[in-house]
Amino acid sequence: MKIKKLISVLLLVVMALSMTAYAVQPRWTNTLAVTMENAYDNGDALLRISINARSDADKIDNVDIRFYHVASSGTETLIASWDDLSVNDFNFHWVEYVENVHKFHTYRLEFTADVHRNGYVERISDAKTSVYNYSIS
Image (tube, rainbow, N blue to C red; front, side, top):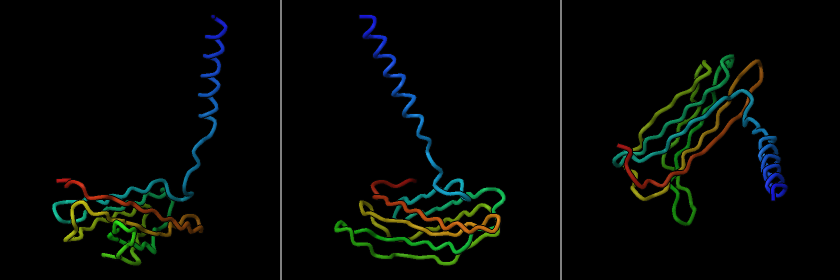
């Protein structure tokens, strides 16, 4: 009986160690974090994108942002877009409101950007799809 418990404990330890052996690879080299918000705010869409690059990054440019309505069929209709935004810094912060969006509809916010660091340009992109079920305010 004690041997079975010991074997069970050892197996659990081995499983736990093997799961932690696979380190999560960073998604980008020059970019530390991206945060996106795509939320319903009393009839408006609150859209926010923050790109945090490494502190020795020179600039973030060629930022193109798209905001789509996503129909139940999956068809996307472009609602608004912003092109060629940039900062000469390692942090990019963008906030915009889009009027006349509808509760219980699905919307997609996406972007692409170039992060410059040490002569290397890293192209990054991300997207966030949200169903506007409730208002944030």
